[in-house]
Amino acid sequence: MGVLTGEVGVGKTVAIRAALAGLDPTRHTIIYIANPAVGTRGICHHIVVSLGGKPHLHRAILIPQAADALAIEQAERARTPVVIIDEAYQPRPLPAPPSLESLPG
Image 1: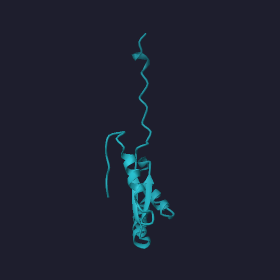
Image 2 (image 1 turned 45 degrees about the horizontal axis):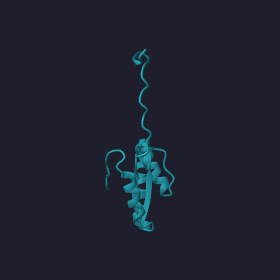
Image 3 (image 1 turned 180 degrees about the vertical axis):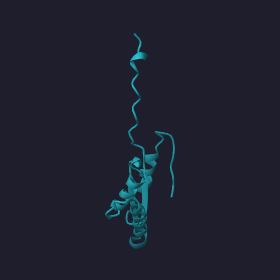
Image 4 (image 1 turned 90 degrees about the vertical axis):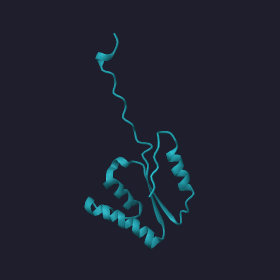
């Protein structure tokens, strides 16, 4: 497991994509999650679907299902799963417009 953090605009996503491009696709399965705001359930759902499974509806079963899917990918297919959770392109909330009272005039 690795974690890459840094200020906005320093090239984290570019670095991740460059590293992924150097991986052997016959030995690695890349699972790219661009929206971490989906929460634990959404992340586990994405992992299961990416590995060809049908995600269970109940979270208590879905979480171990995702863990099992990752383990099976390694053990049976001899491919190391690489899960990337990238929040680079998340929409930022717009600043609130000024109130009418604060406008000059």
